[in-house]
Amino acid sequence: MADTQELIARINALALRSNRSKSTLSRLLFGNGKRIDEIEAGGSITLTTYQRAAEALAELEQTAAASAHAPHSSRYPEGRTAFPHKHLLGTSGLAPHEIMFLLDEAEQWVELNRQSHKRDNRLAGLTIINAFFENSTRTLLSFEIAGKRLGADVVNMHAAQSSVKKGETLIDTALTLNAMRSDAIVIRHGSSGAVRLIADKVDCPVLNAGDGQHEHPTQGLLDALTIRRALRARGVTEPFSGLKVVICGDVLHSRVARSNVHCLTTLGADVRVCAPPALMPAGIEQLKVTAFHDFDAALEGADLVMMLRLQNERMQGSFVPSPAEYRHLYGLTPERLKRAAPDALVMHPGPMNRGVEIDSIIADLPERSLITTQVEMGVAMRMACLDVLTRQARGVEGWQ
Image (tube, rainbow, N blue to C red):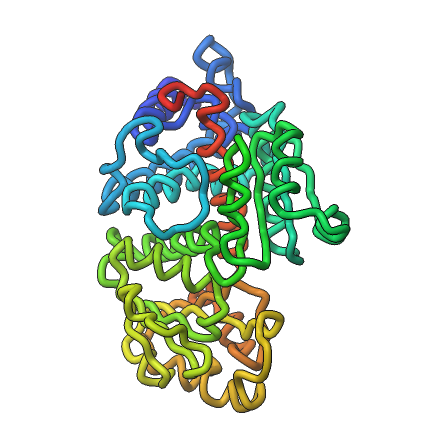
């Protein structure tokens, strides 16, 4: 017979340890936010349901135990002081405990997104505008799914359909969006600093979905989440401490590279950046990284390799002789990957140019390629950011 009392006791204990509500755990374990309350009131469950919930609970307990041993997970304070920022404009300037707080918050959404019922209505009644002044497929879709899974009303605004094409200034567009009383605005723009300009003109939280060559903070955060989960699965309890990371490709034009550098160095990783001389930003060493032009040298003993595509749409003129020459010097091939650690992990923020910066056989390596996992973690991390940044407006206890 199913021991429901023991199961409920474990759930209550996990709720206290992980700072999750019982309704959230109830959705994760039973697909119903009220099921735990019904069981505590004397309701029964079948043996199959009990076994399925017990298995899922064991996984959640294991994740919570790993989080408890993370170097920063217990260092962030309660309530809004854990993440006191109104906006998320970059990873630069975030404290280690603020980054770890967002990573821990995203864990619950990873679990929810793997359930058959992928919905939590905590943002019901809120309106989120995805204002994309630059073309995007992956990031826009990820933010849209994140908002809808949290129960919000999501509106997508594309630059081709906006008044900017008719001559409206960016500030006037910001004032228009603000007048619509949106509860959060996600912005992607081709100019560095444009997102901050809009954030200064609106009342609601703003999330940077990429601005020019500046930053793409949720990408840096989701990559950190991907790395942490992959290394914890290998039994590494302090995944970022001394982690040797190589970021290779078009570093000059990559906002992803900048957000990852800020995020990973803040968490204690040893970051190396590698690019052709023409694609390496001047003064990159000031970001506490080691710069390489020789990819083979950069790869020696690396624990993780993150490849970047050539940002041809942001280039004016020719920065590399040809794709074939670029692959010869900077493409991640099976032979070149052997210079890294034997179990080195591989990442790419996408979209990939297979056969240029990365070979297909590497991109699809089981056990080592985290590329599709990055996509999955993107939805969870964006759900966490939308949840956290709207807590004050929603009157969540401790966040007013």
